[in-house]
Image 1 (cartoon, rainbow, N blue to C red):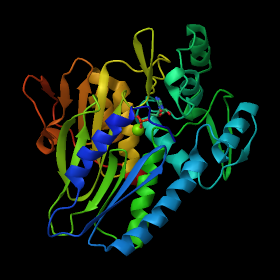
Image 2: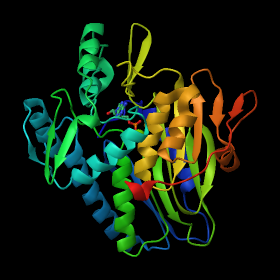
Image 3: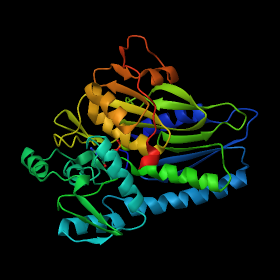
Image 4: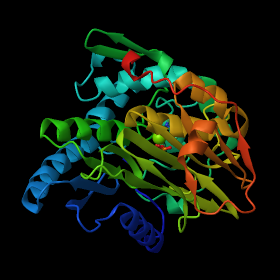
Length: 361
Ligand code: AMP
Ligand code: MG
């Protein structure tokens, strides 16, 4: 979906750190398999499975991811590109089966985020230069071009579904599932794993993951949370059962122009990269919601994240502000083990319930 612009050295260091946390330990049979998909390094961790079975399972999951990546890609030719062309032309067309569930989930989550997460703003993302594999040579668009797109105000609310047909009331709508597709793909991968009898596993896409079961011996999975500097870990959490951990950060895709850094998470209200947040980590049951929420809460920032988290039904949030302050709710505080909290100002919010709304989608 999107290629990371992080320098290779950092990515290597990070994968090493993650592997150290997730990797094998004596006495348990844990298999790790890696492949590239969604423009990122995907890792499957399987407990209690022998090497040959792990290879077969990985081949199935990898194949699924490649098909989804092709179907949902925001700028390569494929079903989504055709759909976006139809919206631009004001045509009503058949909604591809592979896009429909993602579109429906996106619409619900967009409404709950007050439109902060809105996959219909693909033209804005494109305008900022992020609809290309390598954004490094980009420069910011003109304020006039941004104002013109804001005036047209493309949003998920413009889409009209009529049975299996879809159209857009607004020709400026361009769908970009970059903020949710990986989460949705990881949820599908977990379904697929379960259908193959796998109950203890992690599906990890570049540090965003869903963990099911445990390490096969009753011990919980240990999950690393990336620090936005790309070289350290902010902390770790233990997971057993079924939980997703997703992080959104301005460090993932960005470029520099005249000394300013411009990143890929765009505030639909201003048309500019969101300010005030360095990264947001969300723990939630399903990966689809966790992915969309991490993006929405990044935009909501230090002053509005609590309201948006409640609306999206997300029960555990950690937000690192640009000024270095950490914001968390008590449920997250109880789960996260910070690597180094000395000198960090921690703002604890009032508690809020960890209601999951996934069933309502
Ligand atoms: P994530 O890394 O999950 O936070 O997703 C970021 C990606 O989502 C970007 O690279 C864009 O493709 C897309 N995106 C950027 N801003 C938004 C937004 N406000 N709502 C939905 N998708 C967005
Ligand atoms: Mg996201």
